[in-house]
Image (cartoon, rainbow, N blue to C red; front, side, top):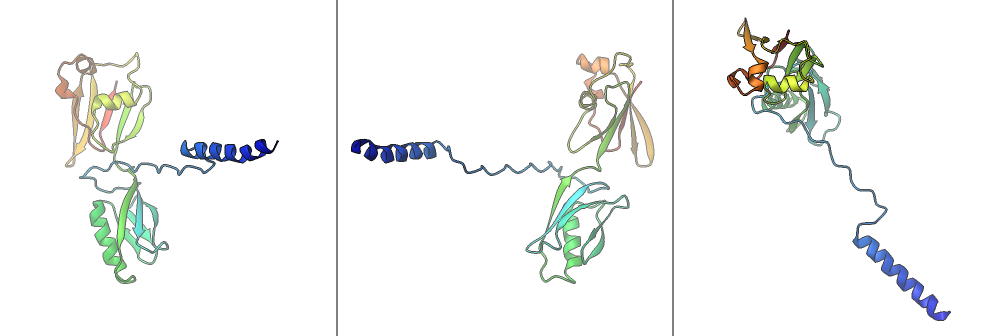
Length: 200
């Protein structure tokens, strides 16, 4: 009986050490932070974008803001600041300049949380017509795929891309049948913000 009493604490210690070595502890593992959206180098802020404005060591001045339809965000103490049409670095400089009147040596970081202003649209004979975000390069075929593909009633040879640029409206033809067979693939152009793909 005495030997068993001596052995039990040793066995328990060995079991605890083994569990610890294999990571079997009751401590919760830290959560993996969500990935930030990939921002193109030429990205210009627009309405509906969600922006994180972070002031170093000043939580009261920091926060996430949605760019209003008029292209403006409102910051504590500073007030209204135009954000639409600026790159993130340009907005940072503008906010730091404005904050300098109220804060000593302001240090600002701009983080784009959601890229909602750049969208393309698809309508007509696709499974899921609607607006889709354009955070990076995307072709006509890729947009059709995102929209669930063409319906059985779609006119595959007469898809149209409507594009507004420099005050003019252009109509670009796209033959889905050809491109899907590897023919005339130059029609599979990269879409620009505001493009509308029409599938008759």
